[in-house]
Amino acid sequence: MWRKFKKTFIGDRKFYTMVLAIAVPIMVQNGITNFVNLLDNIMVGQIGTEQMSGVAIVNQLIMVYNLCIFGGLSGAGIFTAQYYGYQDHEGIRNTFRFKLWLGVILTVLTILIFVAQGENLIQMYLNGSSDGGDLAAALDYGKRYLLVMLFGFPAFMMVQSYASTLRECGETFLPMKAGIIAVLVNLVFNYILIYGKFGFPRLGVVGAAMATVLSRYVEAVIVVGWVHLHKEKMPYIVGLYRSLKIPGYLIREIMIKGTPLLVNETVWSAAMATLVQCYSVRGLSVVAGLNIANTITNLFNVVFVALGNSVAIVIGQLLGAGKMEKAKDYDNKLIAFSVMCSIGVAVSMFVIAPLFPALYKTTPQSKELAAQFIMLQAVFMPQNAFIHASYFTLRSGGKTMITFFFDSVFVWCVNVPIAYVLSRFTGLHVLAIYAFVCISDWIKCVIGFILVKKGVWVHNIISR
Image (cartoon, rainbow, N blue to C red; front, side):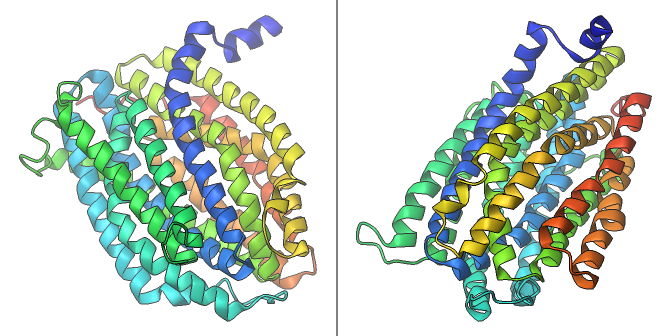
C-alpha cells in the first residue's frame, strides 16, 4: 500500500528540484508582495478603522480587475506554455500580442467603470451597522484611494503581460527580482507618504495609493526594459512590435479556450466581492476584521498559489511536448505536494492567529473577529490547495469551459446563495456563515478529484 502511494504521489529529488526551481521564485515574489501589502495594511490600519475599511473595500473591487487581467492573459498563456514546449517562437510572439491587445481593452473599460460608478460600488459595502465607526468617512477615504489607484492600472497590465509570458517560458527569476524591487519601493514610499516623513506631507490613504502606483511603474520599467535588452535570451521578443497582427486561426483558438477563463476570473472575483458584501451587512467591524484576516492569509497562501502556477507551467509544457503519461504522473505528485505543504503552512497560521490582529489600531471587536477568521481560514487551507491545483490541472489541457463551471458557476450557484440567505434571513454569527460557505466547497473537492482522475485534461491544444 505504502509503495503504491509513494509511487503515485511522491516524487524523487530531481522532481522536487525541478518543481521548486519554478515555484520558489514565484513564492518569493508573491510572498514579498503580500508581505509589503501586509505592512501597507498595518500602516493604514494605524491611522484608523475608517481608513482601513475604505482601502480594504477598494482593494476588494480592484481585485476584480486584477483577476480579470489574470484570466484574460491566462487564456493565451495556455498556448504560450505549449508553444514553448514545442519551441515555436512565432507562436509565442503571437500569443504575446494577443495579451497586449486584450490587456489594453480590459484596462480602458475598467477605468471607465470605476470613474463612473466607483462611489456606488464602494457604498454597497457600507450599508451595515457602523459599530462605532463613521460610514461616511470610510466612503470618502475609499473614493480618494480609488482615484489615485486608477493611474497604476496601465503599468500593472504591462507587467502582467510580460511577466506571465516569461514564466510560461520558464523564466521566473526576472519577475521575482522586479517584484522585490517594486515592493521595496512601495514599502519605503508608504512610510514616507502615509505618515509625512522626511519633509513630505502626511497624505494617509492617498499616500498609500501613490506609493503603490509608483511601485507599479518601477516594476514595469524593470521587466519591460530587461526583456528588450536581452533579446538573445528571449528570441520570441524579436519583432514583437513590428506588427501587432495576429493570425485569425490563433485568435479563434485563444478566444474559444480563453474566453471561459476571462469570464471565469471576472465572474469568480465578482463573486468573492459579493461574498464580502454579504458578510459586511453584519457591520463595519466585520469589514475590518475580514480585511485583517485576508491580509495575513494572502501571505500564507503564496505556497499553494505558487505550486498551482507550477502545475500550469510544468503540465502545460509536458502536454505541448506530447508527453501525456509523464504529465499525468507529475500532476498527481504536484497536487499531493501542494496539499502537504499547505497543511504545514496552515498549522503555523493557526498558531499566530491570536497575535497578529494586535498590530492594528482598531476596535477590540474587529481584532477578535480577525483572529477567529484567521483560524477558520487556516482550517480550510488544505482543501483550498487541492481545489487550486485541480483548477490549474484542468486549465493546462485547455479544458477552460470545465474550469468555468468548476469555479465560477459553482461559487455563484452554491457559495453566494448560502452567504446571502444566511446573512440576511438568519441570526447566525458571521463566523458560522463563513464556515458554512467554506464547508460547501467539499462538493467542489469531490468534483475536482473525479475530473482530474478521469484525465479529461490530458490534451495537446497546439497540434494543427
